[in-house]
Amino acid sequence: MGSFSKFTEYIGSQFGNPRGLIGKICCIGMNIINKPMYKNTVAQTNFDKGDKILDIGYGNGFLLHEIYKKNPVDLYGIDISEDMRNAAAKRNSRAKKNGQLFLEIGDCCDLPYEDDTFSAVSSINTIYFWSDTVKGLSEIRRVLKKGKSFYNLIYTKEWFGDSSFTEKGFRKFEPDELVDLGKKAGFEKAEVRDVVKGKSLMVIFTK
Ligand SMILES: C[S@@+](CC[C@H](N)C(=O)[O-])C[C@H]1O[C@@H](n2cnc3c(N)ncnc32)[C@H](O)[C@@H]1O
Image (cartoon, rainbow, N blue to C red; front, side):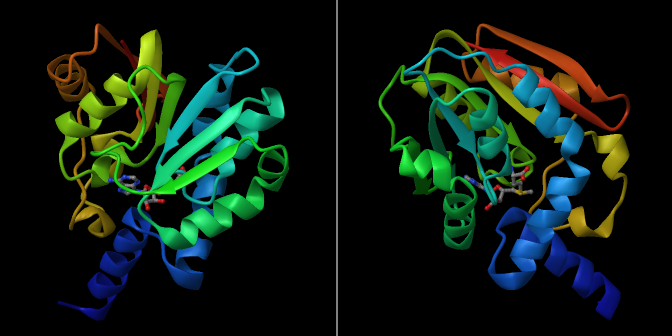
């Protein structure tokens, strides 16, 4: 393997589990590139006082921070990266100070929350890395309240193309495939919306 491929593979692994200084830099890059995704997700959020929302794979906590600016609700998050928990806690210090920040280190395929807890669950660019997509979706469905939704944002398979950083440990999805997986996980409804046509999309899974 050439040194360029090794480098892109390393960057790909940082997207799936950001660590150290390079992980922090990758996340700042994501915050810039993913702007339309954060904006579209926040646009979906209108919560009541006391609502709990969960972000899967919160990274450096950018989305949680944007949600809190609009709706000061209880923020929950789970991510496999310890370094990201520290970064996300720093970014969301206002929510933390108000006793409204609950960040876990863990895997979304085994969520440490009670059934019917959340008014919304979000996830931006994480589903590619889950070890078992249907298990992850079933867990999210379990912790959502009835009638509430999971907002899952991804880049399209066509946009990723053959990019070498997605070669290892990275699963790309067609929208129809995600809709089918959502049904398998027991969701009542799954609706696909464009974020940036041909580039990124949101699948809204409703319990
Ligand atoms: C590409 S980054 C996206 C970060 C953030 N959502 C954003 O858009 O800024 C993917 C994140 O998902 C996390 N992650 C990967 N697999 C996960 C899993 N099975 N459960 C929870 N988090 C996971 C990674 O540690 C990383 O922080």
